[in-house]
Length: 205
Image 1 (tube, rainbow, N blue to C red):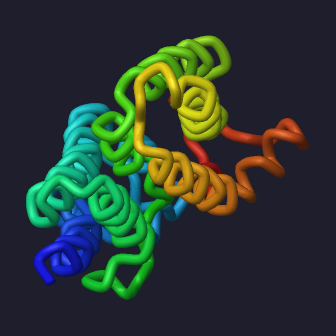
Image 2 (cartoon, helix red, strand yellow):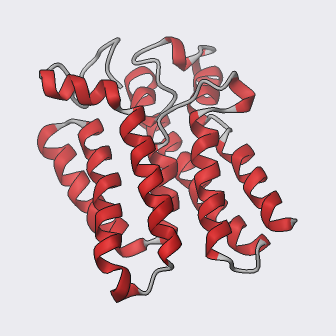
């Protein structure tokens, strides 16, 4: 029962929208009505600036980290429930019960989840993603590279690091979810109309 409760509580943790709260705290606005309309760190940067964006990024990442550790703790170390709790936090971020189920895309929270479950693949893929963002200034592209790269590297390195195979299924699910949430970004990347980091826009995310 405690393991199942961990998954439920992790959803509630993930559903805390720090970008929304930051917008309310600093400017009394609903960040989902400004910029790209996305409740995440990138849109926080666009609407509120770099300080609030970094804060939101760290807090959203911490949600994923906390959820995984909660899953481990309340299940007696069961990797299945750790992965389920992390996934629940991402779902909570994307569809937060507190805020009308209008959330973000879950990238930062997924970073936290993947960093705990599969640190080395996440680190390698994350480094490549950061380089991609620096070079192209496309945050969406970097996010997708991180998700897919971590999952592919985990599959390749599964025997090396002896990760529980169940992790791979959840990482694949999170990657598919991220691709779906970024479907409009992918279309804009193909069309050459995606916004770059630091560019003001009402349509990018």
